Image (cartoon, rainbow, N blue to C red; front, side, top):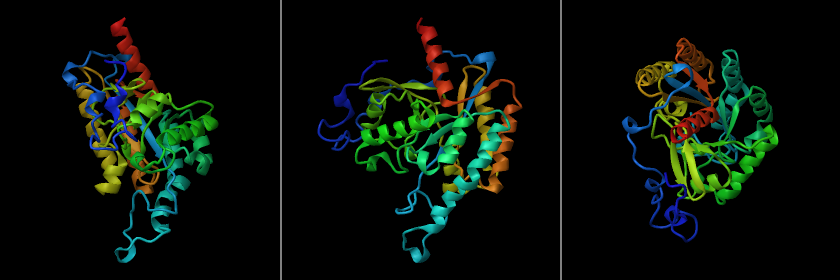
Length: 317
């Protein structure tokens, strides 16, 4: 793959990338179309067929603005601030739900990738320290919870997020998941220039793939909008057991296909959703189902990135 993407291909050349009529012009230039049947043959340790990773998303919802999501519509259809019930819905996740995640994962010897807003490292310091103590893999998730398109200075927000994580953990995050998976035409270039090694925003494959940036290649690690509780619980409003039913079926199919070439499966969860009492047991049930198979590895995003890069280097060497 071409190692550098021409900066002119990432924007208009005037102002922020994608700010003119060519919005989205960079997207197809980031990667080639490569069907999964044409991907190089890969192998996981011990002949495993699936690499499963969990992403725990921790966000800072400002009480002074509109909530990113809502469980209750505003009275008489008129939005009011502060929005106490919907802010509290999310806050419950950090006061209670997060700790259910920590127990569910730790009791099974599992480590999560921890996608965290930079500002949440201070607002929810106790939870972030617990994630660090548990050995979770920190992933940048924007500085505040809001789309990258609305960030006035993306470079500054990215750097602030990296530094907040570095201050708490002692090292910079290797991965990045934009709030809402949002990117402008310039975001990927700025992330690469800041030293980020992999992103989770491009939900377009069951295997990692390289994305071109003006600072060299960036790896896309397979994330999910399928086994994702925002989609299942907040948007589709599926029954409490949906994460188990859908997750089991997703795993079974990927495992079947993984006999030919390994697959990556992501499980994306939020404390205020799957951390609720009526849902957490189904997440635990899904983990127990997956762990009942001996041809699976339970990894973090960084471990998947290292595995893929190692496999590709071996094939080139």
